[in-house]
Length: 256
Figure 1 (cartoon, rainbow, N blue to C red):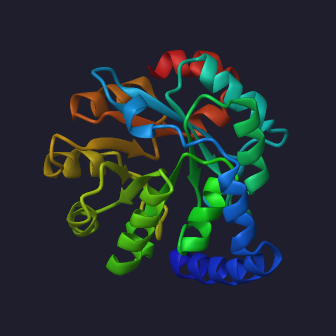
Figure 2 (cartoon, rainbow, N blue to C red):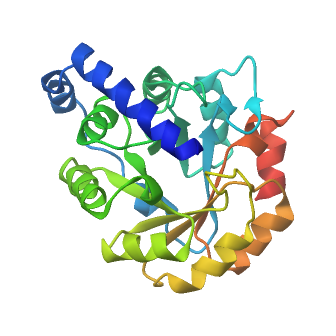
């Protein structure tokens, strides 16, 4: 299964990273950083918000853009009104890196950045903050309840926020039990890689109205965005449709 192999590989990778950069170095770096920006606030309001994603590749489609310039692309997103930028930092399958996150942070100091990766251990929360993320993605399907609560608590202690991702009703119940504020509904099944935006339609009514709801994956056309808005989502997270567009600015205008 894709997720099982991904988790095993990530744990091995983390073990090596912690030997190279000890936790004490990350903590020292965090003390020099400004406070994280507020993702929840920029996703709130009456209009549908966009989290635009910097994404070099995907497991299902391979390389999406050969000559991707992460800072230039993120700058275009910001100029076109994106509320936040999602940065994929997973290296093997998505070809991202923490250097992408750092470069975008330097180029765009005033827009919230979401680190998307397979976050499994507290070390990665410190790492995310040290490299410039304001929020992190937590995927319920790869975390136990104790781990989820631990990562949420640590993130909040560092003044960071979490986009907590679910794909089915059971995962949603677990997320709500942790009183999470921002819930991401992933329309993609991470084991089969199949996509169906009706996952959002099915789960949205089960989420209390005081939470922020983000629909993720498989959003490519204006009609889909309109449906999601009618279903009551607060924001959409879009990556592939933007990264592969010939004209990113025109594509954002078309979608929103």
